[in-house]
Amino acid sequence: MSTLKKSSPVAHLVLALSALLTVGPFLWMMLTSFKTQTESIQTPPTVLPAVWHAENYALVFQEMPFLGFYFNTLCATLIVVAGQVAISAMAAYAFARLKFPGRDLLFVVCLSILMVPVQLLVIPQFMIINRMGLLNSMTGLVLPNLFSIYGAFMLRQFFQGLPKELEEAAIVDGLNPLQTFWYIMLPLVKSGLIAFGIIVVLWSWNSLLWPLIVNTEEARMTLPVGLASLGSRAGTSYPVLMAGAVMAIAPLLLLFVLFQRHFIAGLASAGIKG
Image (tube, rainbow, N blue to C red; front, side, top):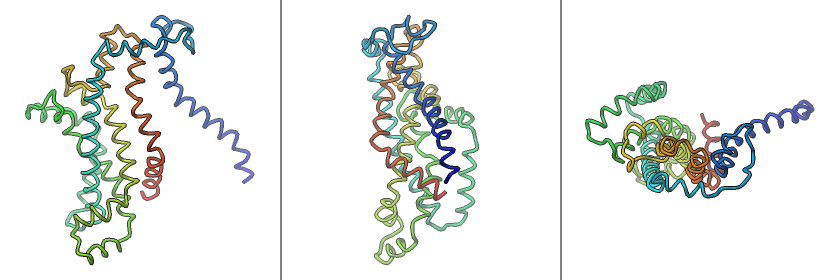
């Protein structure tokens, strides 16, 4: 106890510096979004804007079809989240609770795919989507991302932690495996589903590489791709770029604030059960 008390100031200092390093770039982005172009690149840099220029946020809509990018990103995120949560939950339940030949070997093979860098999968995925004629389409954007091996692994830990007596009681009541999964087991892993869903939202909303490759038409672009292209078309106007970035991440911050309790509880449970 005495050692813990002596180390508390140091621990608090380390945590405070870590928090500052984490939040600092975000605060700098917000403050830059209210500056002029000259003030944003001057040396030495200023922390607070001399005059707050909120019109930078309106300029974002003049420089690019921001609402269209928002709509594309929202649609792709909703489809990917629904697909990954549903398919990963069913795969996790099968790996955790059902018995079939080669189950453990198949799970190890699936986990081994996590060792493959994502960049190596982009070229074959692009060739398949191109042959299917799905370039510059919402289907081509979301199709390769409807399943997550990480999600199956994460949710498998939750299903394994449920007592076997629940399944035995469901069999006595005459439920088949699909009904047992849907009515009995799935509601009991709600915290894990919410935590995984938030992770998928963050990943899908900020995804850049695949949308940059598969959708090159402006009408099909997502927010990260649109903001990346804003630099060239606006002559790298940093205040406008930062204003667009702030509006792009605002839904993610709201989502985390609303569901942070489920998100933290889900990750903590996954860590304990893993």
